[in-house]
Length: 288
Image (cartoon, rainbow, N blue to C red; front, side):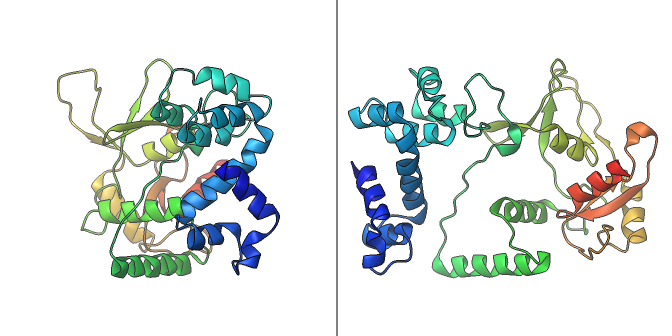
């Protein structure tokens, strides 16, 4: 009932009569909810118009808010019956995991796309820290000369925190744990308490500058092997004047080492690229 009223209020422009620019702004000010909650309620309210089965199950209490919120991300009029059947007997947490990696219109039997899987990361800090956070975002936006998305901001901060104190020229700039299945060759990134499948492109990019710790199925410890020796990293950094080598880019922070030609093709020469240009550089080199 609440979602129906919110949808009706937005259609008649109630928020304008109350002096607010958007319905979400009205909800934040008048209903005392967070902006994220306001946006989610408005999104679900709009999606339920085309999902009569899910809307009816929500109205009768058969489906709770969390399940409905997640189903509206992927279900359409043609697929809502399949998704309702697929989540039968599953908890809200399981439903949240099920819809990860699926675009709108996908079916439960489809293979998820690891490149679109997202996780919510929230921060609760004092107001003074919040101000510093906004200043930091503006500084990074100014350095990149564009507004950076949340994912890229987080990636840069993680790399900066995990970068060694010697300037990053003798060790990989950041380290993550990735495992590869021997049978299907799919790669998974392992974090504290989570395991997420990653795309082939992300896996190949990680392999370009990695440390191999050996076979996890073997109990015997193996000596770690680096794809870039420390002396090579130092030489490349000095040769490239510690800057990104992508044409027109002069970034000196968040720089990674990459092969100019893949090692499988017999080449060992490397260049340095910043986080913004890494994907573009690899694409340009591949095409060339």
